[in-house]
Image (tube, rainbow, N blue to C red; front, side):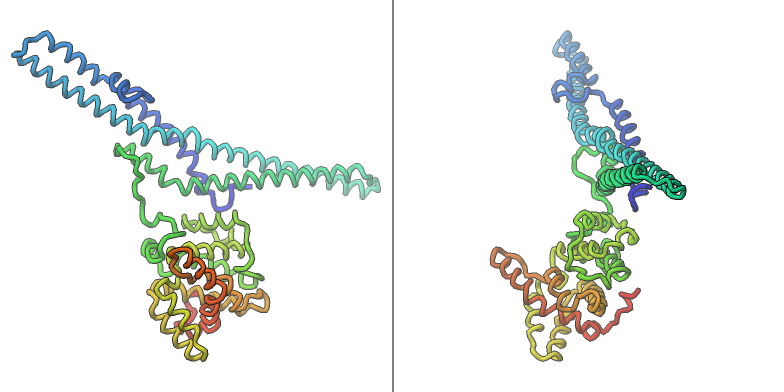
Amino acid sequence: MNAPFGCNKVEQRVEPAKKAAQIIYKKLVGCLQSQQGLEPERRMKKLPLMMLSVSMAESFKDFDGDSSIRKVLEMCCFMQNFLARTLADFEMKLEKAVLVPLNKLSEEDLPEILKNKKQFAKLTTDWNNARVRLCHEHLCNLCLTFRSQASTGPQAKQDGLREDVEEAWKRLESIKDQYSADLYHFATKEDEYASYFIRVSTYVLTQKRPQMSSSEKKVFGEPLLSHLESCGRKIAVPIEECVSMLLRTGLREEGLFRLAAAASVVKKLKSCLDLGTVDQNEFSYDPHAVAGALKCYLRELPEPLMTFELYTDWFKAAAEKETDEKLKQLRTVLQKLPTENYNNLRYLVQFLSHLSEQQAVNRMTPSNIAIVLGPNLLWPRCEGETSLLDMASASSVQVVTVIEPLIQYSKILFPEGTGTLHK
């Protein structure tokens, strides 16, 4: 068994990162003029510059007050003392900002990942060996059966070997999950690790992490417009990726968006979406996890996709009794949406319309979809406990009256068609 699926590139960076951290740490320690771990005053006293300052102070005492040599020595003594204090302060900050993190990275964090990698390889071998023994025993039993020499002994042994295979698989799955989590953690922290080397090369005496490229920012919890501008897209990455996977494997899945998925899989998919490293083949097999990640993205937006500002307008439009008038009012509200919100809402609703067309199989009618997904698309601005109560009320009843017609009449409300969705 290879490395956890989708982690190969990240896995290949761990060993070089450990080696780089170790080498840079050792070389940088060799550049220090003071001893690590000492208090500022003791550190300063050990510096050659301070020793030179003390020697100068002792030397100018033998001169009279009018001597030019004394005056020069006094000035140089002060300068060396000042430089010694500055250097001691510099090396203290350098140790805290660079040396300590580098040492922890090379001696604790990365070795733990490599240890799990080694354990993963060992347990993979154990599992394969257990399978080979089981297959061998199975063949032996077949031979005995063919020769009419069957007995309960070989069968009992085969059952024991089968249990060994299952136990080996359980251990392998456990370490695989841990190793995979380690690699994803490393990937999310790689920018921070890179900042250690930036501090080394530039000697920046601060603990503030350097700002990385805006495209490296996390996706979940980021304002929609900010995310779209940073990645140069019209449709948010989580929405487009999740819809794409669900179109492949989720349209006929019963209870999509209603049934919960394994939290660990949803968390892993969210991490991949944050990093921009989603392998659709890895997650498409679990459409409920994909739907869960999509709901999380919509729910974690700082502002709902259908906006706070239009919260009341949506309900007024949905309250119209006549269908034609209701659709007219809904179109009016849709036109008030910011462009980025409108594009993403249209993309999502068109998908939900496709989903509802399979309701005979998946049991997800426009009403059912609105019940489970609506509260993630529209909620009031929270300004205290009263607003929370309002939110709960809206989630259970009012939002459904808004979202259901959007899905049911999507082709009328979004006359641009579904070409973008199909693409």
